[in-house]
Image 1 (spheres, one colour):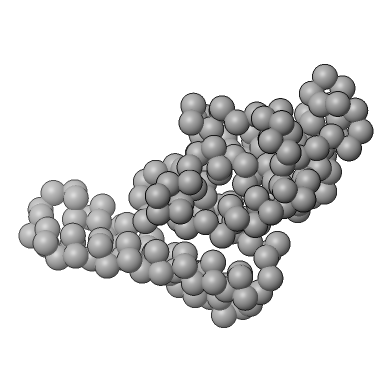
Image 2 (cartoon, rainbow, N blue to C red):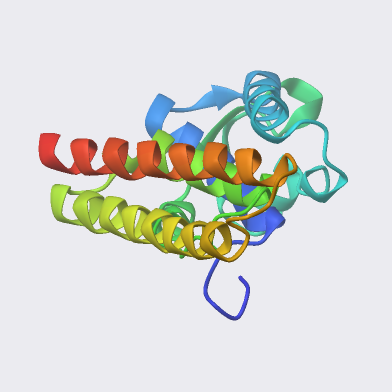
Length: 181
């Protein structure tokens, strides 16, 4: 993790793998690898930062285990270990860096929302509240930038207005989600 306790790309991949196994139950090696690759590619696109973590490394570290067979060579059924479940709990509660165009940050937020239901209600509320606070901070930052560049006659002001509207929608959506819990 980064110094601010936010996830690095390697840890985001761990969260995808562990969350998928905890949510969906044990999966065959090929099915898990395909599911993880599909999700990552659709959220952030092809990324060298995300290609480095292998299922074999997670097995070696004791976070997942073969429930039958031995691994990739025989398409073993894989499941999380107790250590993997503890790691998932740590990763799902990690901070999210301030919103940006960073694909990894978008991935971490997507993962939190994908696996949030695996936490107890109080923890879900806390995580949603944290995400809403981040979006509100982003809204303040964008609003300040918009005020400073208010007389901009180029396309920048319109682009900022678009980002502000998206941030406002995110805050409203997260507040609605919090109210539904």
